Amino acid sequence: MTIGVTLLSGDSQPAKNTIDELVALTRDAADAGLSSAWFAQLFGHDAIAAAAIAGREVPGIEVGTSVVPIYPRHPLLVSALAQTAQAATGGRFSLGVGLGAKEFLEPVYGIEYPRPIRHLREYLTVLREVFSGRQPDFEGDTVVARPPFPATVTGSGELPLIVAALGPQALRVTGELADGTLTFLAGPKALSEEIVPRLVQAAESAGRPSPRVIAAVSVVVTDDVDGARANAVEKLAFYGDLPSYRRLLDLEGVSHPADLTLIGDEREVAAGIQRYFDAGATEVLASQAVLRSPEERVRTWGLLGSLPQA
Image (tube, rainbow, N blue to C red):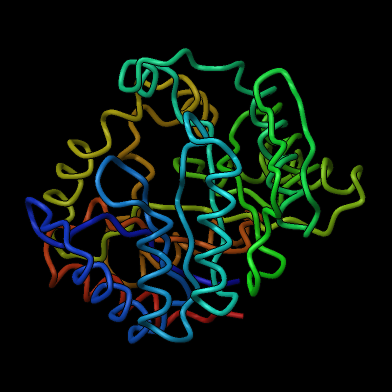
């Protein structure tokens, strides 16, 4: 059981969006005793590159992406970036990918969104081939990968592949082809009753090792509970309108994404984190998105770093 953080591009409002700040935040996380730092992919910094830089600058801490949408990037491009990050960090990088939301991504790029589960399976098949040191020669319905030259990067080794899988079909594909899942807005009930059982069963059926279950959770240690909740309501409202997240919220029995934010003093937040481990999470990542100030971050990360980790 380990605890890490997910990072955006800044610690202030508005975000400064500097690489130096991301490196500084990663160093702060390591100094606080946190095990990992995961970088979100939006439309600014490239998350894989940011993780590679931060991981190389801050020895010892694990780094990853939370998460890189597989649309519209080709898997050979992503595999090259990920292997480079793995080599640069001495084996401390994990690639987190996700389907993304059609409602959000298709209008942005203006490219037709592929059939998601078929695309996920074919995409992961190519990544798994490359990460296992094999030369892909693959033609599917949504992906073709036939590189004329070697696609492996010297020094990258076996690279952990994590998928932001939420629905039953995505969990089945993830269990068969990846090393684990990274969830957001999946509460303890959703984890214990649906996500963990489906993922474990798929991995066992495919003869794969026990999967990682990484739960990203919005966390705020504060005495200003009302103010922190109002901020979470504003920051997380977008997710409540996306079908995949709406399903998880309904399963958990909550109406708003902010209802899953852990807000309170050290004792209350520590108890909330433990509920995720009890539900089957192997790792918990505290989201930076709802923190309002450097002072709030220091207090929150200080608590998380003090909790037992194995």
